[in-house]
Length: 414
Image 1 (cartoon, rainbow, N blue to C red):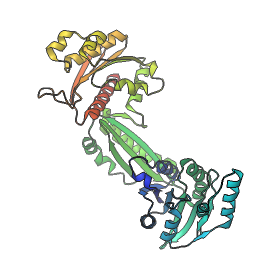
Image 2: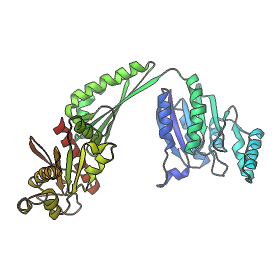
Image 3: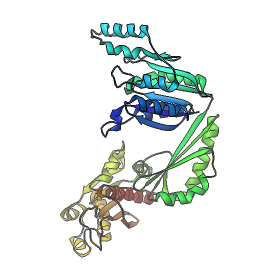
Image 4: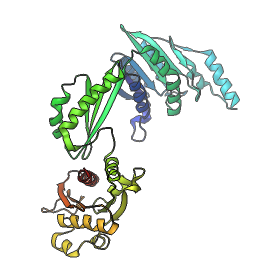
């Protein structure tokens, strides 16, 4: 079975608020074998909401609507869902009594507009709200010729989660056919999206029962695999089989097969080999150090380093010979090598990493354009340096450089 999640609220159509409930609902639905095929955000206009709900009913089995169950004029989810289903609303006196009782216990004055929260869709089962005033509603109905499940849930996340966990999931478990969704996430560094897809498309297109999604982000590729089967082991076997073939094809571009970040993998390799890392960063301004130290326990392998943005600090903190800067410029292979070797020696680390480049938007030239970055890694076996030219704005270039640096360390440790 498949589902659509509708988040109701005009505030989520502004730059200041976003829908987070759908992430939680998606996770829970996937856990009981339901795929989420659509997510919609709708503003607080009744006509638009009716169209959105009606459209969802026409294309999925389960419709989950969050928000719009409050007492104000712009809370229109109940009305819109009833219109879309072609049924009436009925005001429940028992709910009204409960609302007044709740207000009296808390010594609140309940205004008449709160009674709107007692409007129940014909045929709906009420979902009591232990954490708020607006009850949810569960509708098991026929739309056209197909059975549909519709859930109306409150917008506040703590209310929604409690209601979904305690009341919706048990009902779903009784109704749904047994399905299990298995997933895998493979990650590859420093290979383009099109290049990765060219390599692996002939493989994953042979697995019709496994959904494959490729996501790209500044030097990082995620290959997400998902398979739904009646038996969990069968679903897992299919995604694992495909994952193995993709790993073989992408070879050492793959750095993670269980969703770990690149910095986690680098630290894992460092600890596994009893090695330590020190960094001398110029254009990245400490980004590599920040990524590494965001991982708990990184102090076991990451000794630290220096942000050597000025030429003076390249000399004083990383031991770069000033003649190298004069002869080759601060952005050069020779200086990157000197940074890696110097910081390794100064910090007494197993591995030294040096980064220098032009992040822009100013400072570039025809010979050394914006986006040119040199990364060097040094250990007891010698020093290796690479030259890269990264696209994008200053933020993108700096992140690309940090990704390249971490990947170079990873490959060295491999």
